[in-house]
Length: 142
Length: 147
Image 1: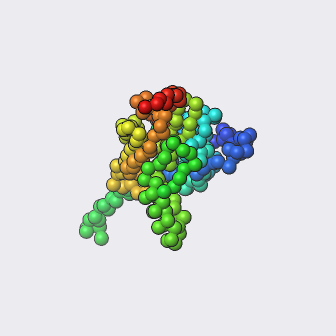
Image 2 (image 1 turned 30 degrees about the vertical axis):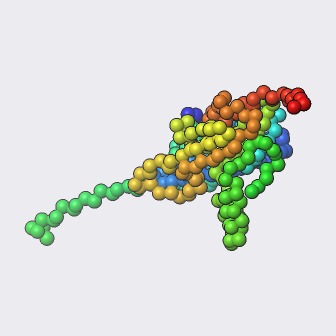
Image 3 (image 1 turned 180 degrees about the horizontal axis):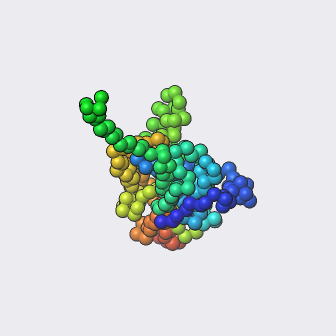
């Protein structure tokens, strides 16, 4: 498991800066699920072929960016016989909803799946307001 | 039946069924959606090097125990199941793009495949099956005799 979260200010290894023009076309949008829990949101993205050290998750203001560099475990001189998919790096960005506390985001990465926990601000969590029973006024005072 | 542009090599089983599905789906509105969904899952690429054949398939989220790779004679089957984690009662989806479920795909191995020596590894959510090649059998001269 790798903690892949980067703090704001750390530069994203820009896929645009990649020297190879062929790779630039092959940037894919990873499929993902987002679900809501009592404490916030959980995001799970499929990034097969990305290793922990090649994954960057950045929060810049209210924008969350996921960038994964794929290492294809096939030797360069291998001859393709049958191809059903193209491969390339993964990139996706989101605008975080206001209720998410960007400073408290945590990330885990295992078996090619990124698991991000996006906790809500404590003020955005449902809060139970205690209802106090007002003391009945004594009839004598009225 | 699709004729693949390579001979005596990996030819994909169940291709007829797939092609029929595709033709059927193409007649429907929004055929691209059907084309997308009628693709075999997971997608597989097959490569060849001097010494081996390499089959690769993305299987994110799967652990070795969720996968089964079997080779019987000239048939190689990969099988897997991805289960959606149990969700809490209060949890609801906002977005659901990942496909979960069980799948299987079968390939016929090329003639020179050494099915005894197949290895399979899981590398960052990619299943890599390596099939070593048998040494090429040299042509044998057959003497023609008079009966």
